[in-house]
Image (cartoon, rainbow, N blue to C red; front, top):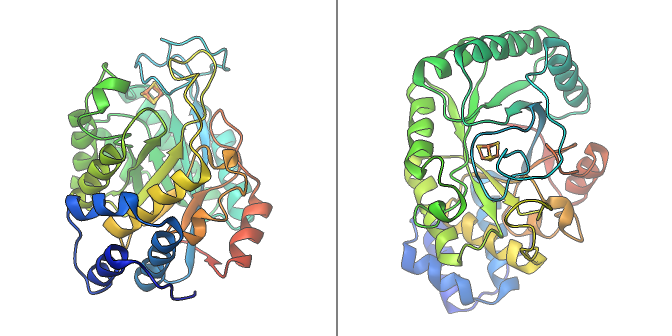
Length: 327
Ligand code: SF4
């Protein structure tokens, strides 16, 4: 894609990243006030250098909905909020494997079961393992899992059932985290991520933006993800849900989202920066962020908010010069 002329700070920091250097927190903060198009063009170059034109799609199914004991302010599934969403217990093997097969047959290489709740008990982990084994018998999809703050032995069982990657979002910075959740901690999240890594699972971890955090909070989280070696980073845009404490938060502008993604690309040059929940809120459904450093997305229907369709997304990334495959 086109080489872009950048202003001094962007150009200098782009050269640093392209030559294998790591930018510091202060350098990342310099990018906050840079000219947007120059920043995004530079991020696109970094993405192309480190990741090529591969685009990584994943899909998810809501495996257990609502009634969560935790009080995350942004979440429709917390029992602390009155959102009127459907509640159900763990889905069974046929629903899980049919969901995986549906997405796999349409070219989506990854599939995750995502469950509401602080964690899963051992009986639930047993059920989930049956689901993942059933998916493995049904199709060759790459299996990911998101089941809260699991213990090492539980994560090991998931791995034995064929799960390759575990998802646990940091959500935001360490310092801002207590403003959005008080029933568990940032360190609980870090422990889970380290537990997953310790049993040989890959890790997917990112956060949610538009919850009242500052650009410095966003940068702090990206630096922690870099420190943890995370290579798949979901970017969720808050969809303010009636009945949650954040129901009146303004929706982030497309330009703000592009800036977040571009700065993340500078900090995490070889990661898959994945547009997840809330992409459908953007006027162009993500087209401009896929030219600003993002090279991955969740497609299909997302948890309790509607995403974009697989056919639409496949055509979009192809038009942008990407090849949809996972690696
Ligand atoms: S732990 Fe997960 S499901 Fe529960 S409220 Fe927080 S984000 Fe929602």
